Image (tube, rainbow, N blue to C red; front, side, top):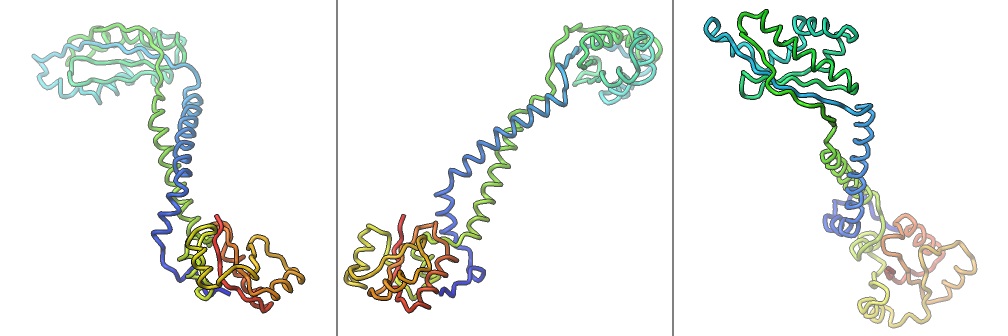
Length: 301
C-alpha cells in the first residue's frame, strides 16, 4: 500500500501547468459563457429597471448675469448650484402653476441640469417614460426659468438657446462592461476551479506521480511506446506468463485471485488521469494480502 501523504507534498508547478494546458479550453469556455451571461443579465436588468421606453428632451438656455452689480455671480451659479435650482421651490412651484395635473415629485424625478465649461449655457434635461409628461415639463421650464430670472437680481435674463426635439434615450448602455465583468468572473471561477481540482485530484499523469506513491513498483511507461517495451524487456524479459490487471476492472473474485497467484505476477494497467490513488491503493493492498506479486505498472491513455 502507498505511503504517499498528499498533505505533506509541496505544490508541483509543472503538474499545474500540464493540467492547465490540457484543460485550457475550460477557461476559454468559461470566459465566453461568462460574457454571454453578463450581457443577458444586464439586458434583463436594464429592461426591468427602465420598465418602458425612456424619452428625453435636452434644451440649452443662455444665462445673462448682472455683472455690473454682482461681479461674482458667475462663481455662485455653478453647475452644482443650477442642478439644485432646477429642482428648488421657486422654479418647480412656478412650473406647477403651468402643470395642474402634474405632481411636484414627478418634476423632481424628471429634471436634471448641467453646465459644462461655460457658465452662461445651462442644459436642462427632462427624462421619463411618459412621452406626454416629458414634453409638458420641458415646455413648462421654458417659461419657469425666464420667470426665475425676473426674481433674482444677480441674473438679468434666461433665454432658450436651443429647443431640441424629443429623443428615445437608453440610460443602460453598458453591455460591453457587463460582458467584460462576466468574462472576468468566468475566468476567475474556472481558474480557481481547476486549481481546486488539482489540489484534490489524486490521479496519475506522469512517472513522477506514480513513483512518489509507489516507489517499490516499477513504472514501465505508456502502453504501446518504445519506453514501455524496453523497460518491460529489461525488468521482466517478456510479458508472457504475467497477468495484466486493469485497475478499473478490479473485482474481488476468488478464481481471479487464484489465476493471478498461479502466474508470474501482475502488471497493473493504469488509466492516465482516470484511475485514482485511493482505488489504486485498494487494489495493490488487496493483491499483497492475496500474496500476489505486483511486478510493475503501465499507463494507458
